[in-house]
Image (cartoon, rainbow, N blue to C red; front, side):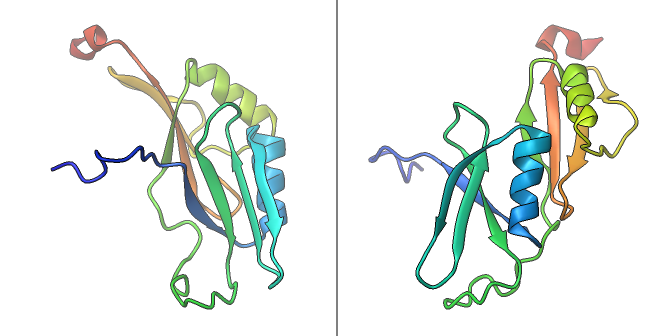
Amino acid sequence: MIIFGFMNAKITGFTLVVKNQEAAVEFYTQKVGFEKKTDFTGPNGYRYVTVGLKDQDLELSLYPLGWNDPTGLSTNWRPGNSPPIAMKVDDAKKTFDELKSHGVEFKQAKPDENPWSITATFSDLDGNLFQINQFRSTQSWSK
């Protein structure tokens, strides 16, 4: 079944709940290397801020924990309760070393290697998980 096939639709963002928006913006832009994409404060005081990888449309909206959401939809949102957000990289070991040199703390001492990929997982300041993945060629999977 194709629901969105009749229109030009794509996923452009998702929300992470963070305890401190300013600290989260600093973490993502200064340590992880993302860029700030949007930063707008509305008349009601709500700050809408997003970050993402350069030259990509996908944005992370950094939603402040405890914001008095008038819709009530976000009352149960909490930081760090999601599976890892996956990022494909060309060289996982190099990316691991670069991020670590900027103060990013990983869940393992070195990237995990298996027949199909090299991966490493880190968390942001609020426990939201990210995984860098370098996929090997399908020929290496049987080795």
